[in-house]
Length: 275
Length: 364
Image (cartoon, rainbow over the protein chains, first blue to last red):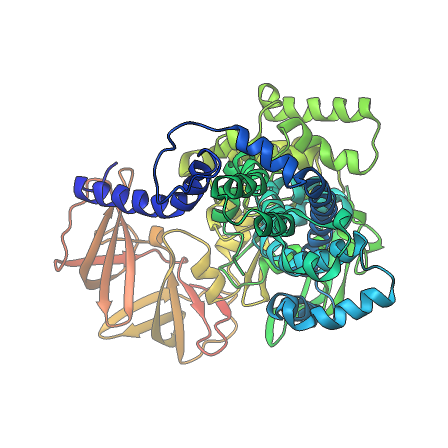
């Protein structure tokens, strides 16, 4: 490393290690706790006396996580696919096209990010009840899509604004339609930004607690976070089992992140928030 | 191939007048260069022709088709961009084929044309590479190839050489010119570099602040600039200007300033002479003073700087406040700042301009 003194390098690493430790500590703590023997009370950050991987299986069956994971997968998959496509289309229009009312539409989308969900959940409940959607997947999927699209359009618009204009113009001259320019030229270019959006949307949907709590009562539609909450209500004293339940809940998000982290980081760094 | 006509074209961006009543006819097969400093409207004119901007007033024709309301893809043009605008996720082959694919050209035909273009440009061995694995010069060729395969009516080129280093630029300059004359496609080329304009254009159109200042073949524009702007913009080092008092004497013109007197034979074509004129002198027409070589002068001045270029030397001389000249000298000429020198000017090569309008009056 030229131009950076040894002391600076050491300081950089020290700061990075400190922040990584802060981020990893709770996750590692929960994972370690989940491996303690049942009925014990693991305290702080210590290695378990024996490695009890069976806790995960127990939690899975006793907590009916199979059912919850199924609902969560259905909801998250539909939400991620639909809201990503809508975000790409919306961001493309707002980021590359000039049309009347574009700014107003953009601010409306921003409003969707700004208004807290708690403020609209009661009227939304009555609306969905009137539409006979309570206790269906739609009651979870539709509001989550609307919530994700607000951020998604904002995010994708920023990407499209940062994409080289000459590329779009070259494609227009080459004879590509707006549709072709989007899918053949810009989307391949925007892979990091889109994958980042997918990870964020997936994590948001997977971890959504409040909406399923309000919109569902039928256990069939309960998603994982609420399932964990029910589970912890039943096993308040069994910390290792509770921790095992928590590991089951966070595992999918971690896996998705690990598989996409290179693109995710590129997306975060690519100036996708420019404009 | 086709002619191109700008007919009283005006373009405003809000309050800014980017192009003002621009009229230009480009011949079929001609290589025309729009040249000017930034903000001169040259790129705007090109983008209007491409259909990437909409006209405020006037009309544009390609061949006998009015294209004012046609989308870029329906104008049958191809454009080479300053930053090349290659599709980063596609290979060179796919980049070249993209435009043809969008036009639903048969696969065999695409292949034939891509290979032909690759051969013309010498990029046959790069067809499987992605743009990021290419050097600047190679990317430039691919961008050019993308235009060639389309076999359009008109090529548009927007400063295509400005991202190349000096050596490669000179090389590519002559190559573009060669390819264009081989293919014979009408080409509108935009640059701020007057060397490119002079060396490449069949004709050059000099632009300034949205206005077309002069159109002509490079020789004419260089030898007979229409005004002070064109005279100063074309030529490197640039023409020197100074204001002088002018008197018509018996068969001669006398130019006076700060004690210097230049007496020159009065040419036939000079219609009138205001009391004051702007005198323009190109560096090659000002030389260090020697008796008996037919220069007018001498003019005395102080050396401000010396530019040794190897093959020749240019000396910046201040003859009076606001009367600076660049003097051409032999490669081995010596001179140091603050030294006094005497130089003379070549008769018949002094350009006179009207001080108010800055229009050319003629040469003495």
